Structures are given as structure tokens and as C-alpha cells.
Length: 270
Image (cartoon, rainbow, N blue to C red):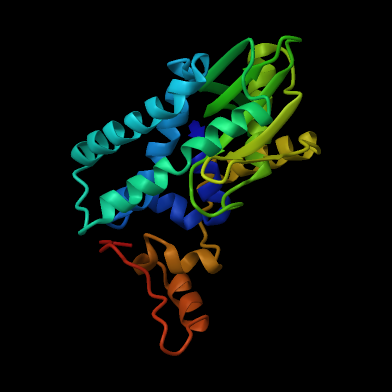
């Protein structure tokens, strides 16, 4: 089995959602490209900052970044065929450009520039579960090597809500991948909120318990344990129409005058 952190996160939240998305390959609800659009574009900006070595000329860095954002947003709009409403694109672009000085400032204040810097690096971690060896893979947003050879691991968050989806177990998984590939555990690990100019550093502890939990999760996936887990996430689920438990959950949490029924897709044979 080859599985990513994103897939593991979905399974931990709701195994039934995992089944619909990754086993049955059912489509997600329309509009996802627009929801994630500016986060992806800002993430690409940070990647370009390191790949193009913009830090070498701080005066030009901000203007280069703004030009990149405009070009990348236009390119992605064409590729994804995003149907923007009146003024949506322009407003989104200006908000994305507002992140540029915060990104440049964070690089300096948090010492996120080293002797070597790796961006968007694919890594794997073999895990033995139930007698089988599975490969967990992930893409590290940023790995910085300081002059003293110590490593800093960063996972970038390009969303607008500070703290959302900052799962310490993601950093634990990536840190174990770094240790396997480079022979040392990261000295620092944290989440970098690009739009807020904030890095939240995390202490990575209880790694043996984390590894045991990972083994258990993989074993349950292998045994096709896909029972639904209900919660607040049900109201945003792409597969709400296929899940009676999720429908019951949203009905119980409904507020008079407020529509909590999510956009849905038609699922045949669920």
C-alpha cells in the first residue's frame, strides 16, 4: 500500500469519507478548485522564492514576488478553468500580494534561510503493519540546513484561518522521514502561516506512541474498516448524500434559519 499524509488525515477524521474519496474515487463537490485557489498560488510563491534565490536581492524580491503572483494566478485560472465572479479575481490577487512582505519578513526573523534549502521534496517512510510493508509518502514544503548542519522542518499553510489544519502528527511523520533520509532528527519543526507571517514551532514528542498509532491506522485500512465517524466535519463533507449518519448529524446540529446542508454530489449504489 502507498498512502500519503493527506489520505491518513482523511481516514482518521472519517473512514467512510476515505472510502468514497480514495477507494471508490467518487468526485468531490464542485467549487473545490476555487476554494483552494489562492492558497495554492501563495504556496507556489514561497516555492519560487527559494528556487529562484530571490533573497539574493532583497530590493527586487518584493517586486519579483508580485509579478510572479499575477502570472501564476492567470496561469492557474486558465489551467483549472476557474469561473470567477465580477471582481473576485482582482480582490483575491490583492489579498495574496498583501502576504508578500510578511513572507519576506518571516524568512529573516525566523532564520528560514540556510546553507542549503530544499522545497517541495518528496520523501517516503516504510511502515510494517500486519506482516506487510506499506509506504507512507509526503511532500515536505521546506527543509533548511543551518551552517552548523542542524535541520529545520517547515510545513507551509497558505489558508486565511490561522491555526486551521495544523496537525502536529503531520510534523511527526515528516520528521521521521527526514531522520530516515538525512540521518538526523530536525532540530526545529513548525507550521508557517504565510499570509499571517507567523511560524508556530512544535515540540515533537511521544514518537513511539505515534508510530504505534500509525501502524494501527494502516492495519484498519488494510482490513477495510470504513465505518463513518460523525462530527462537525459532516456539514462540509463532499459525500454527505451517501451517508445517513452524516445527514442525521447535521439535522441534530441544525439552527433555525441557517442551512447546514452541504453542497453534494450524486452517489450511485452507496
